[in-house]
Length: 282
Length: 278
Image: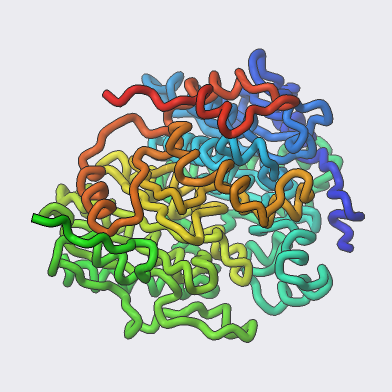
């Protein structure tokens, strides 16, 4: 079993809340919404940014979304809060949206499927993507888990993805334990595979090699950030905001990175060759 | 005059499905098998890579208008989304968007038959799905994006989010649509939560008829090539507010649910009954 999860039950990470509070100085509880979604407007680089996190709550009304999962209430609340920022900024410069990401997975359950968690997740992804298209710099800051459908819902539509260089920052399509069960491999075998096959790896340094990450922030205490750590991250966020504002509102920066040229060669070749055939077929 | 014999859409391959949705004689496949764009990651894991990576892109016309169909082949690796198959869909949508922005609308249709991310390509499959989501949201501002979930694989994982992002979603009774496949739920939450082998229960939760009855799909169709093609033609002119933008409405619906006493699928049909068609 990996150090990151430390047992058969996933560890309840407090990093999302820790960094949310460190960056905003606020608890971010909503007047009308679950305690699992924290939202606060706080200063960033001379302007106001909206910070958003999904956190664990042992008393959450949906039992399968108590450990930091993105469930139905969480996803719809994300959609609502992001769209609220879009509506509020119609007549002024769109504020940055900072998704503080530490999400273990989407909520797995019968009620979740019946009540269409796929639609809730899509609504949150849509809201973030729409905010990006409206000119909001959307920045994802990975401080812990960024797993699967939960990451698609909260963070993966960002103009820029930043991450703390920490062994507990894990990015994947499925948690290690689940992937091991589904593929009938041991966790150790999966880890070995990740060392050979970069997209199979969980760790953030491997993820950085895929060219999807804008910045890997090294040398920061991820569990107990001091003032200097928070200031460093704040500066990185501000720089990413400025960078996002200066470039197209799509996800193209993920394909123009050095890492993409090396590891996502197939993604680039598909686009290049399809563009050739597309015009010939038009 | 007798009606023409029905023919099954579900039984068609992805290639045949794409051709069936385009006007007769207009279909031209892009990046077909001879392009030999295969997964670079499967052979490293001892899996034979198919020459189209399980996604067929075809251009042509729908109702005389320029169109592109991206059809996932459920028979190859469960329709899973890897780097190449996902990039094919994303790239087609991105080019359709470019053409729309240049004033040359292209009608996009997605034929979704997929278990979600291909675990052998994990993070690159997930990244491609995020790009597909981004492209649908951007493209939907110009032209309706039509999704078809016919079966039998169904549509799961991040691609269920893609289905939900479509302007108009067409399903059959055989279709299933959900974020987490039944096997994954059984494994993660236990067989008491869901028995993946109990087909009636699974279809009751996430089958096409239930999704249609609760307003989560727009059109419920018979498994018939002509019927589905006709619905795709009509759907391309649809202009309702996308479901993913109806946030307040769905938050109200959810607030009325008690998670300790969740409704049965039948009860949900009454609670979330389809609004009357305009």
